Image 1 (cartoon, chains in turn green, yellow):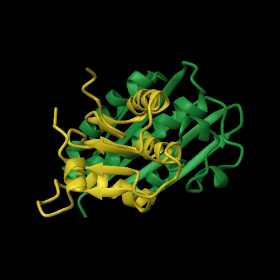
Image 2 (cartoon, rainbow over the protein chains, first blue to last red):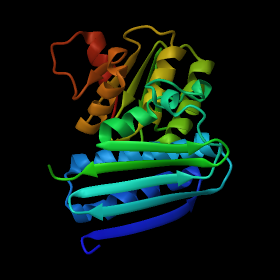
Image 3 (cartoon, chains in turn orange, cyan):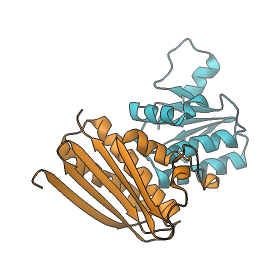
Image 4 (cartoon, chains in turn yellow, purple):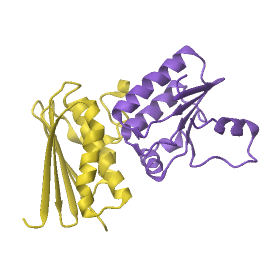
Length: 141
Length: 122
C-alpha cells in the first residue's frame, strides 16, 4: 500500500537489548508525529511485550524475538513474536496481578499496561510453539 | 561510596537510573536487598529525579520492597515523580501503598519529614 511503512527487527532475547529495541520502535513511530505521551505509551507497551518474551517465553535462554512495526495513516501497529514455550491460559495470563514468577518480583501488570497504553491488543499463543502479541494505537487523536 | 544507595540511620534512599526497566530493576532489587539484609532499614525513598522511563518491572521493584519491609504503610516513598511515572504508579494501583511526592515538600512540614526529603541529589 502507498500509505504504509513497515519495519522488521529480529534480535536476541538478551536483557541488554531491551532498551535499544524500545527506542528503535519509538524512533520508527515518530513519522506519525506522536506526542511525547504517545511515545512513552508505546515504549512502555513494547518493553512489557519484550520482557515477557525474555522472562516467560524463553525463560532466560537466548533465541530470536521478532518485532514488526507498521505505520498506516494515523495508526501504528506493532507485533512482538517469540518461538518460546507459549501461554497455556491466555485469559489468565492477561489478568492484572497474575504472574507465574512472583519470586522474581514480577508485578503481573505487563499485559494490563499493554492494554492500557495501546488501543487494541491481541494475543496468539500455542504451547511449545510461541507467542505473538499484536498491538495497535491511533496516533494524534 | 555507592551513589545509588544512601543510608541515613534506618532510612535508605535509592537514586533510580534514567530507565527503570527489567535489567535495571533486577540490578537495583539485588542492591537494595543486600542493604536490607545487612542492616535495619525502616523506610526507603525511591528517587525518580533522573528517571524518564519505567515499566511494570519498576512496579515489581516497589511492591517487592514494600513486602520486604513488612507491608507497613508509610515505609516506601517515591519522590520527584514525573507525569509518565505518576500514570504508571496510578494504573498499577501501587500508589495506595506508597507516599508519592511530585516535588520537594515546602518548608513548614515536620522536621522529620524535611530530613527525609533533604537527601542530596548526587
